[in-house]
Image (cartoon, rainbow, N blue to C red; front, side, top):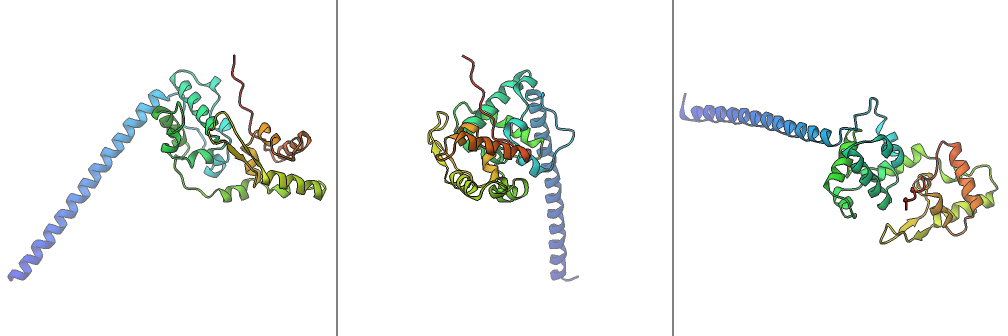
Length: 240
């Protein structure tokens, strides 16, 4: 064997040794990361132990279109420290005008932390609860597909009524208005481009749209009910 072949054999041997070390390091790193995640899970279970993973998880898209009051359990069902975290999470969703799960998962941790009385523990609780359902914060989603799949178009929602009234309703909803709310410094835009937008607005919000009367809102509620849908629940009044 000449010097050239010897050097080649040495280089090949070194390359194999480096690959073996890299593979071993990757395995050790994966085990350490798994142990860290397990420790985080156990710690969260102690704090948020009232929440067990659901026995049957609904398809992700069905979960995304769920309203926040239907996604989280009611405060009456929760005891111990978890109740405080749940209460702050629900308050955060109310202040941030987050009505559906899809609106929540598209928010980032930094965006949520900007709201008053929202701390790391509240974010950890939300992440923990979403994680049990295969979701997380900061998800990049195309909501137009959800609109098409789960909610009828506005024209279909108002099918069967005179064309002129249908046009008046749809035009007023799409034109919308801007509301100044105590919980929001900048206010919120109340415009309805699809049926899904109706589900994240309360009756009070819809009534404030110019051109709509109580009878119109009653009609909207009846039409939504036919599809098993409803306007967003009014916030509970604070006890004096």
